[in-house]
Image (cartoon, rainbow, N blue to C red; front, side, top):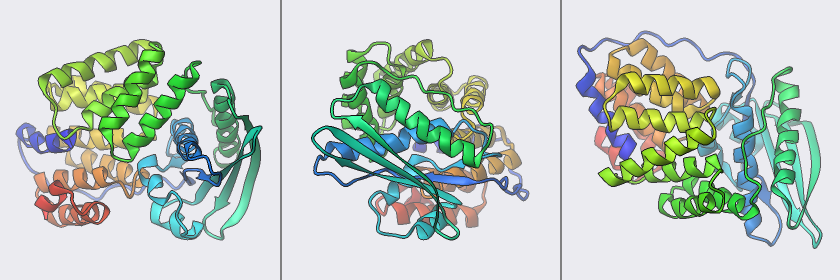
Length: 356
């Protein structure tokens, strides 16, 4: 919310108002939605595991350029966790041509994971496989499983695309805490998410993703004190020291540059780095839209917003921020449209209601 409210301030950077030109159509490429894997066991922790598998798959597939493979963000896919809707209905709602779903069962020896790739148009089975993890599986086994799934999917939908294994931790408890923290963050509980992510980085001080998650949890709070902004900066700095290729860390750095330091030059550089490392990062596209809006580059802003919406179509924060940017540029019909979408997704969203 703090970042969302900060979007209003970009009006101070604007020197004139232009009418938007027609945005270019999104590239015609396969688009995949990865749903949280359904927990069919009696072990409730497997619900977090199922969400973590989906999130890691999205992170692995996202760096494939959207011109070759569009990957729907987890903030949109999460809306359909445990849904009884058909694959066709879900796919159409998300603008996806393929859906990757799965399930988790458990016996005394193994956690069994089933993955299935479904074509949305006719709900036909395209590919599937089964995987087993030990009850006390090692992090390397978890990572190997998600990389195998991502590699199979990429070979079918974006041949010759390379899947780069993500930085992870060898500390099992740190991994579990991070996964739960990230799950809670997507669920909209940044306070608890921050607790788990901070514990994860304490257990493994070299786990870059835990530092990113801790910073993101801070920046998701309704407002930030000067001390919290400084803490977020320190966390991001450490994350980039540990993993300079992190799209998320570059993005968070750019957001602080833009909304707290008012340094558009630094913000633009960091946002470009975020998109270079992961061109499928929907939030980075939204940040770039805000950056272009601040510069008065309206056509580029609209194109960036179009990309963000295509990658995260049912995200409350994307809809609310889009409404603000359109409102600033006096495109009131579009602002109203996105504000209504935001209110439908979260009826209590004050910012979207204010635009209406």
